[in-house]
Image (cartoon, rainbow, N blue to C red; front, top):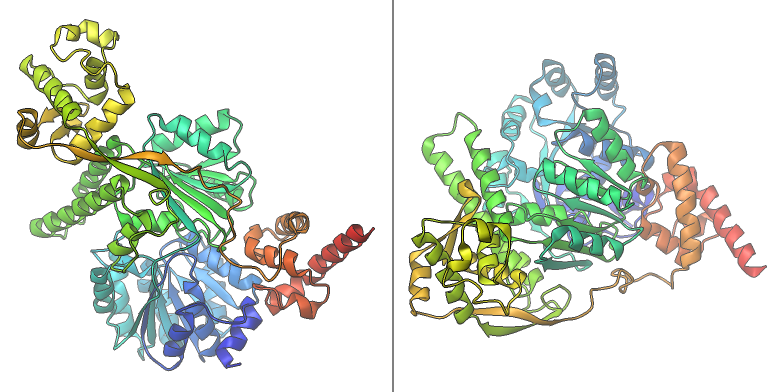
Length: 617
C-alpha cells in the first residue's frame, strides 16, 4: 500500500480511490498542476486533501462560501486532520489566533475566501509560511463563461505572483464545459496541468420532468411518496420559497426555508435544522446548497426551472451523495421560461461596470442560449441522462433505461388541427384589440362560463367552445408547445399575453403541420426502495441500520455536528451488513477511519453487540 493509500485509509476510512482520484493525487504528488472536473459526490475534496497531508508545507484552499469552508473544516477535524478557515465571520481575536497557529505549523489545510487574499495580515502570513499547494475549489467561479462567475476569483493569479515561490496549483469543479475548462486553465495560469474529467454521469440519480397542471398538488403528491426522507425543493424566487414552505408546513410536513432575504441568524438556524434532520425538507432559492455535504439527501425537486443546465445539474447533484438511489425531479411550466428570462435580464442590468457594452451583450446572449438549452431539456422526449451528458460534451447511449423519459412510452400525435384552433383564437382576439394569456385563451376555446368571458363578451368569438372536447390543461399544454416552437410569443410586460408570430400565422392559414411526441403510458413512479446503486458486502439488516441511525443522531447532538459528519448513511448500511464486533472489523467498514474509530467506535460496537444479543434472545 502506497503512502497516499495509507493516508486515505487512516483518515478517511477507504481502502482504494474512486475513478479519477488516484490519478489526480499521483499527479499532484509528482509536482504537477491539476484540474479535476468531477460530478458532485464523486470525492473532489479527497483529491487535494490526501496530497495536503503528504506535502511538507501548508495547503491553501480557496473557497467561495463561509458555509462551505466551515463544513469542510468540521468534517476534516472529525477525521483527525488539522485544518482551519479564515472568513469574515471570525472575530479579530479568532483571526489573530488562526493566523498565529497557521504560522506555527499547526494546520495542514487552511481554507480562505478569495476576498481575503489581499488582506495585509493574510499576505504577511502567506509570505512567511511555506505554501506547498494552492487549491481552488468551485473553480468554475473564475470563468466568465461559468454559471457562477465571481470577479474576486480573478485576483488569485495576482496573489500567486506575490508569493516568494509559486506553489503547486490544483483546481476542482463539478460542472464545466470544455470552454469553461480552458478558461480555468488560462485564468489560473496552470502549467502543463493534468486535466482529468472523470465523467459527469451519476448512475444512482433518477432524472424526471413533470408538467403538472397544478404544481402545489404535484409537489404534495411527490412528498407524500417520500415521507420521512430528506430532500431539497428549489424555487426561483424568494416569494415562491415563502409560499411553498408555508403550504408544506400547513400540511404537517417538517419543512424549513432558506433565501438571501432572511436574517443571517434565521438562515443559520434553518440550515442547521436541515443538516441535523430536525426538519428534513428544505425549501430554498439557489442561495442554498454550495458546500452542503449532507449525504442522505434522497431527492431534489425543482419547483421552477433553473436558468441553465450547469446550475440544474449542480443543484440536482446534491441528492444521493452517499451513492444511494435518489430522485431529481423538475416541475416544468411555460411560465418558468419567462421568470428565468426576467431574472437573467435583471442580473445583467446590475453587472460589473467595468464591462464594455459589447462584453455585456455577449454575456447576455450566452445566458439566453443557456436558458434555451435548459428549456430543451425540460421539453425533450429523449433520454434525459443522454441530454445532460451530451451537454457537457460526453458521449452517451440513446437510452439509459433509468430516467423519466426512458420509463415513458411516447407516441407521435398530429396536433395540427388543435394548433390551428389555438392560433385562430389568438388571431380573433387580436382583431378585437384584445390580448390574453394562455389561461383565458384556453377558457375561450373550451367554452368556459367564467367572469372574464362574460366581461369581454368572449363567448361571441367564432372560436368560443371549438375545443370543448379538450380539457383546459390539454389546451394550455398545446399552447406551451406552440410557444416553444416559436409559433406564438408572449409579452411578460403584459401578463404574458399571447401574440401570433409569422410562423404561427403561416400554420394557421394551412401551411405546414404540427406534430408532437406525447406520453402514451407511463410506468409507475420508481419506488424509493429501488435496488441500491452501490452493492453492499451482504444484505443490510434494516432493523440494525435504524438502531445505528438513532445512535448516530444522539452522538451528533452531543458533539454538535451534523449526523453525516460522524458517519454517512452508506457507512451505516455497510456496518449494518457486516455487523463488526471488534475494532479491527470496524476498520474494514467503508468510511471508518482511525480517528472516527477511536472517537465513536466503542459506542457503535456496543450497539451492534446489544442488537446481536437481543436478536439471539
